Length: 155
Image: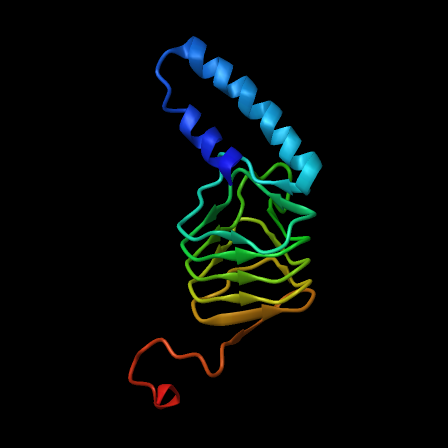
């Protein structure tokens, strides 16, 4: 995350020559992180607060993706393009938990308070407060989920 934040910060540097130097440093650090950890998190990705990578290894995130607050991903996760000629990646909401080996692909929206199961392949939108699991992903409402409302399940 330190290299990611450095990559985001370098865009704010005003003298172009200094920005180019920092860009070179960022590219070297980025490649080092890829080799050492197996995580590809480009600085173009928008990441909210409390973003957590639970286990490293085999994580690939497209630069077109975005994450809300309190998101968690695990090893083997791919968040990216569905087709190379369509540069649109998923927009992920707040409080999303993505299981190990899951693939979330294409121009889709993942809502808030969503759980994506391990090894799921998600190719379509997932509404708020739902679970996605399987290949291709089956989307069902979360049961036993309490959003603080007046629903009798929350009592």
